[in-house]
Amino acid sequence: MSDVLSFDTDVLVVGGGMAGAWTALGAAREGAQVVLVDKGYCGTSGVTATAGPGHWWVPPEQRAAVVAQRAQQGLGLADPAWMLRILDTTWRHLPTIASHYRFGVDAQGQTVYRALRGPEYMRALRALVEAAGVRVLDHHPALELLRHDDGSVAGAAGQQRRTGRVWSARAGAVVLASGGCAFLSKLLGADNNTGDGLLMAAELGAELSGMEFTNGYTVAPVYSSMTRAMSYVFARYFDASGRELDIPPGPGSTVALATALQHGPVFCSLDRMPRDLRELLPTISPNVLPAFARRGIDPFHDRFEIALRGEGTVRGIGGLRVASEACETTVPNLFVAGDTASREAVAGAVSGGGNVNSAWALSSGLWAGQGAARRARQAGRRLRHAAQGAGQAGLRPQRAGVAPDTATALARLQRPMLDPALNLFRHGAALARSQRDLDSDWADWRAHAGGDATQALRHREMAALLATARWSLASALARTESRGMHLRTDAPATLPTFAHPIHAGGLDRVWTRAPAPTPQALPA
Image (tube, rainbow, N blue to C red):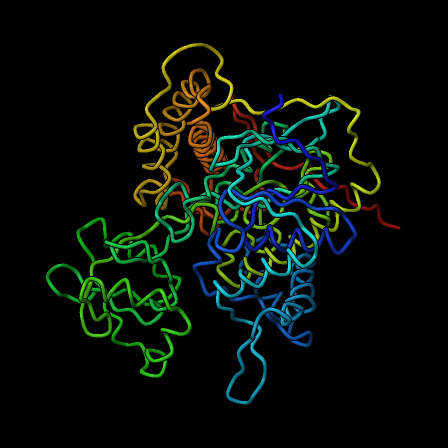
């Protein structure tokens, strides 16, 4: 079609957040021609741009002990070798952005690499990506992947948001770095994170892993999406009568807060925050205090009502299964980075939080970019081979009919994925009911949604949200135990027989399975 923007490249990167930018750098530094397409604007997209991301920053002499402790916390699902890889990669590559980013210094005059200022970090990565010769196409969301007849990925296609013009890209390799899925929970910076990459990869047959670990939560004022959790390390909590609740501050407070919220409103005070940190807060997290000031609240003296915002896979663990050290998926020539990938190898059964997740985004981005560049160099762009669009639900309806109402479908999937009563305190019967409901909604969406170019992006996002929720529910049902952040009230024990990942996939029919046992070497 003459009105289609068509191009080809060695490596196509889908997503322009932290992982996408590091991916583009990794591929470009390998000598590949790289195009990066982003749903938003590379440099402000994603959760990093609104945050103060810390990186897992451990000196070499301390790594063995730190990794051993973290592996124990991962409850049998983490791999120390992968942890050591991201520590080493982060240590060697994070300082290389100093040409475009001003790192802070501590009281002893030592450079502080562990914590960065999100807006400046992403601005620096954007500048570095452009300096490396990467072609950046902002506001060009990918809607589907292209497939060769042999099942390998051939590129992607999407739409220019400003004009509605279709674009189509052929590539020797594709990297999905489009973020995780927060189920539109109002997690700060995550409205673009609707699971698009998971859906597109699954349409080519890619497998997922760790999707049961999608029930992380963070504290926020009830009236705000300001989900910056650092300040709540110093929190005290109260019920509506003013009685202080016995909830210790810190990351272990989620279950206690969710329990308290089931009995009524909960209020918070940050009066325990030390004065020196209060003074530093506008520099460390400049977007935190304005959310209070607009309401006339002094969080260090006043009490304010709080809520728990679901974090989905963004602070959870699940994503596309990583099938190689270069972060290739189970689909040939399709690579994955950041929150789009499963982080079980580096986080285990507990959230990686900001530091492990940031180190993973940097490292997996570099590895995926390098791997994709090498694959494109070996295989070429294969432009003479035919390629077809793989997009289904929300793009190519199966039959004529009225598309389901988006708001209704969203509300139905958000309840099991965001309500702590269902998602944090899980029970097999409730999971099965939710799964039946969303299977029915998926069938309706698959049958009727799509066809209208003006609604293509929203219809695809809704399809991705539904698919991601169904994989999560199916994986939670399959793990009939409690492990890490996955809590089953009907199966509270942690069982040795479940010290393995749960793989998932499928669209019209979702499946789950345990991985095949790793062959053991015979004794000499």
